Length: 213
Image (cartoon, rainbow, N blue to C red; front, side, top):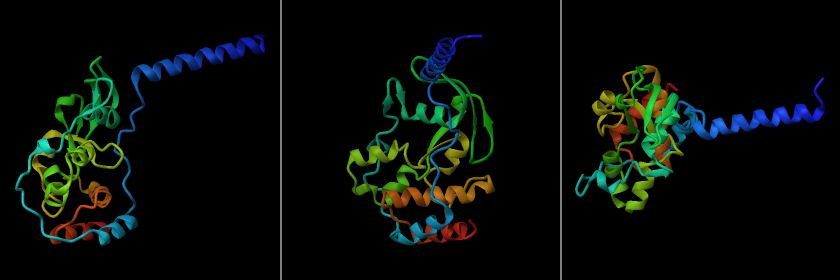
């Protein structure tokens, strides 16, 4: 029968292997962006948002929202989200995703090639600009465009993301109807966090969705 010392040594060795594996492969994917506030809180937040007509696009440029910045090592924001939102994601020594599986929450499609995936800014950059971000500093816009803490970045089917463009929920909602409540909660959560305004049609659309959540 192994001694207590031997058993402890075996356990320690096993933990060392496990830790080494985690360091090599990175954190386990949570396969989702950060959870938004619940329906009741989203309804309360929506009531607190400033209602105003959208501002002009004068002066807008995506370059004013520096995005896909380096997060750690060779990994930029896009690669971090691909790792987070995917399953069995493998990355090369430059942090590019070379294998994995992604299920797009907007349409339910499954992909195994990262080139089929876009990282959507849930509240689009142009929408943010029209809603108050035109008054921010570039540093504030960079933080918004690379926000991994709030439900602002989502790995989705590229063609669906491009169909969305910079539309708000009055003009576009995810094709997967079962995701409507989550999407609306995420949208309000982000706008409330960044104190962005909503226009009347946008608020009406969100109110209708959230009343069913």
